[in-house]
Image (cartoon, rainbow over all chains, first blue to last red; front, side):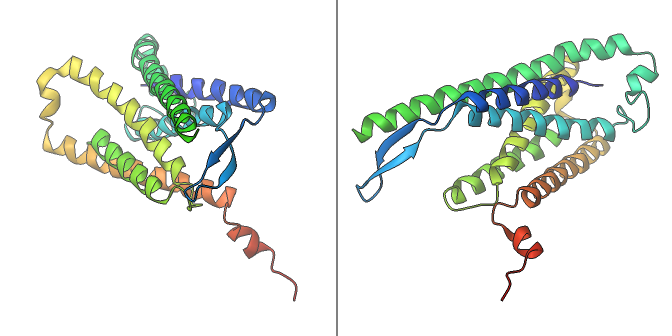
Length: 131
Length: 105
């Protein structure tokens, strides 16, 4: 019905958060040996970059899901844009948004958080192994 | 079928990204994130449908399967269109810039 609106709303919030984080963060420089054994100055991946992963998943997923809703006639190009609203099925639509929509956002965010944790652990392992 | 086709697109685009990661300027990462995001969202959709339909979920009517496959392929194509538009706008290789501004001899 309109479940894609929940991750789309989260995408707006996370995109704004990314811009705020980006304006405040500083580069973290790490010295690592390259494959030839020469020490190279590298920058550690920033948190705003990691937030960018979440943004891309949320925006991309919502866009493709919105297309699916157009395909099934649940979204129309004219007002009120949602067939559920036009047919007086607002309560059902809100129920779907609060169940499937919220769960979509939660799962995408949890998977992203997992990737952030794994990438942090991996980065620490690389730095430790390099010493 | 839509979930399967999108998941397949996500896996293929991730493999292509990994293969070319260090030298490529084609922004394959955008495709990966987009398809993975959509795959996760459709997975939730599928779980809800499974809860509602039970085992019947795995035995769709041929016409529904065909329509879902058609939708899946259309979704993959739409993802590719979004990616190519982003690639041309961001122009990481400077191809558009070089096409618009020719060097004076």
